[in-house]
Length: 143
Image (cartoon, rainbow, N blue to C red; front, side):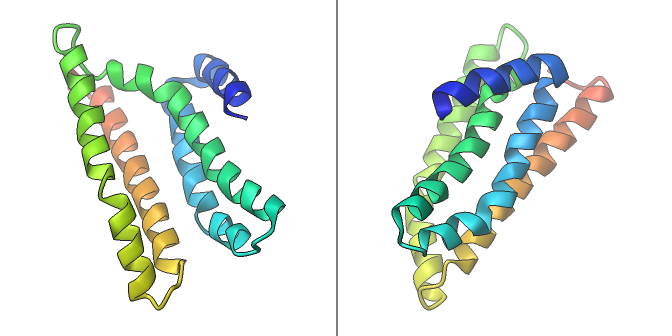
């Protein structure tokens, strides 16, 4: 799926804009937040496959454009460092996700609801940041 969807999303980004396609991918995470857990709870092979494919499709759409989009936020002189620091910081913060989701799940009496809400909340925060960055750029303060 990823090998097919990535170039299609990249072509869409070329046609409709990097920010728009990245935002669509981020918003699809919100849409997938609860269905992925409902499908996983079916404990059926098709349900589990769909539970994995929904967020993967959303990520594929967002990631097809995000590298190029974010690289434009830095001047050529600082681009490599800016991208590296951004992705490494996100990766470091992401190491907390398994522990945090386990805590949310067990604290809620083994319910996926808070995990799905956190997943959707992180996607919403990402969308807000992307829109805010776009507004900042439109005022001429990028770089």
